[in-house]
Length: 223
Image 1: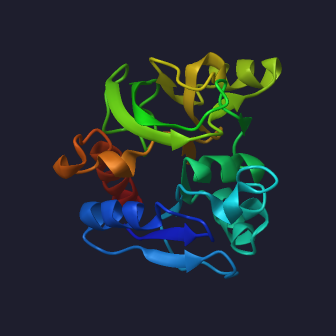
Image 2: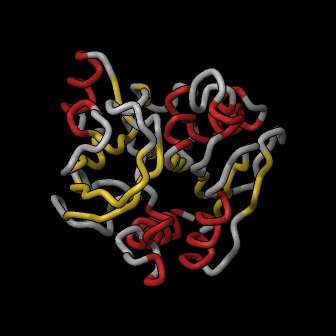
Image 3: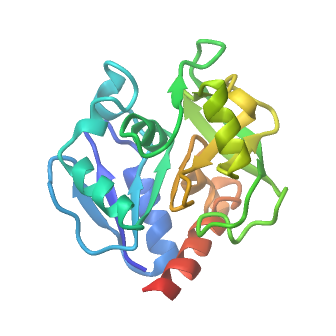
């Protein structure tokens, strides 16, 4: 499986996710600068966490209009898997690749701590290595993680099984306790918690490891 990590000014988790991908695949991912206009041939594109462009305007709003995002949209439309973590999730909603929006946390404060999640759906390359209903412990670090969508959109993503993860102790006020959502094809996933920060024992937990291992197993079969 070949992967690429998109690097924006202000990204601070690009190396973290690159290390997790290298550990899972045995091959370092391509690091693609936001001003590039082309992507290499890859099976997975990752938009990492951080504070792209200093979170000016809205979190992810400027990054969603970066030159590389045209290529990301084209690859996503062609079925290439795309993972957005934290700021990457914000970018995916701003780019129209995922429904909803990420607003300021309900408590209006930055939150940095481990949280408890429940796995909602395992019918995707991202979640296939988990069990339905499995409880995970992953860290969050965000000020704008409050998932919002109008009632019609919430009904649609619930009915179509697009909720990937829910908070068990909702830290930010997200609608329906949503921590992560898929697109309709379940080939694009955005989530606020950081699986790459829980992918080896030295992190204090390894609940994120299965996401990367599941992706390798699923996408290697497609290659």
